[in-house]
Image (cartoon, rainbow, N blue to C red; front, side, top):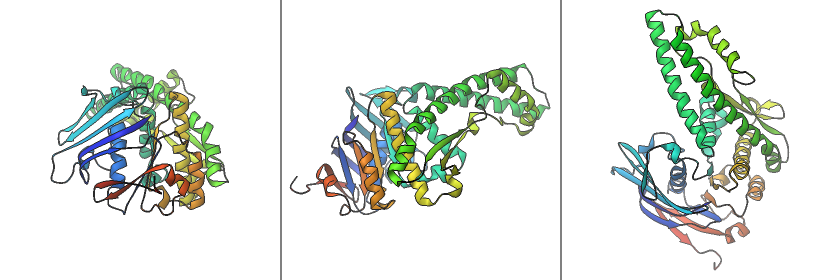
Length: 367
């Protein structure tokens, strides 16, 4: 899979851009604030319809403008044109100029893996951040997961609203609440099953990848869910046992919306005991394991984005990471300086200089 061309209109600091990429390695360099991350953010947004930064979609619209457009040509088994149009009213999504009304009909078509310095939040932040990670990554390879997630959130919202009604009117549990609970459990079990399978696949790769990067330690991911090893009947009893507390708080206190994952190195929780460097290595190993998982599940290579990787790690670990990247996979690397990049990598790459929202393709070594 590759993105062969990209067009931007009023996206971040790009007023207009039309660029063609190599199907192998693309290196985008320039000083901070010039637009390197904005460029790869556009590729990510084309794939997942969302930005990997904070804020809603409208933050990508260039200041003083009221609309932004991202358009890209993606080559997979066939070639398709994808387009996202963002304005203050939301976003419109098109494939080959046909409007897509359901996100689930768009997701999982463009497979992309991104490492960004902000990804350290995966380890440092709250369980909500890690659940979001699971939801995005699994939705990117499984359309049915996104459908189940959407249904779960709808039922959860309805159940929480009804719990508030029961609390306000001082009414005990009834048959309607039981129906909502059973629906929540059924869809929730599907979510948990998909998450279990995803984590199991990641764990089958991540230990070796982490050791290749660091030359020490054993990394694994621990999935935490109240639904694990419980059947529908057991889960229903769990909700029934705690129903008075849920009515009192007016919200659902158990379920996949409370799930979490832990990064474990040598039987110690990375968040609590590891250095910042070990946390970075853990996140990168996770991302590289995702590549292997996509190759296994979908029998294709994703697009890989390494945003500002070289400023985050020492040269030895960078070289260890680059050795793990398949030369046949389209890769985007952003950096402030190409002088520290291996000459062999430069000779095989397409080089772009980023300067105040302008992209210039450079010729390297007579190439």
